[in-house]
Image (cartoon, rainbow, N blue to C red):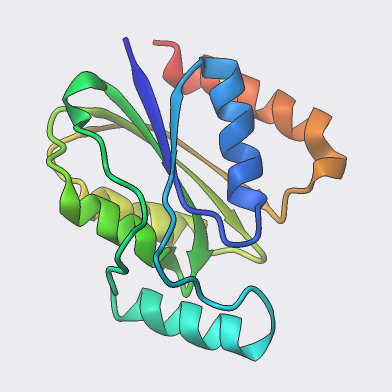
Length: 161
């Protein structure tokens, strides 16, 4: 069974989680990199990030998206923006054919919205089996031990079946 972690990370929180999951599962990692990144701080970050999420924009990516044929489990990680997933995830979803895959989600946020985000991801990825989801509120390097334990428990519960 081969797994792929597909994620987008603006400030590093989602990458932090993806790296821990990847280290524990031995998954391949695909960090989505937009050709034009939004600002990382200030009002412009919230304005451009929120606008692009609400309008379901699909930014061009620097990465080449691999074929999903070699993977049976796909783990998608995103920050929560305006109650939904980040636009690079939208680009990924619209550019691949994914049916009959085992799919799990993880999200990082500053104050909620993950449940709604996961529902929108499930809607966009119909035809697959959803096996688990986990969310993190502003995870940091200082919490590595705690977060790693949460992730190991989540993997044992949902991904090692």
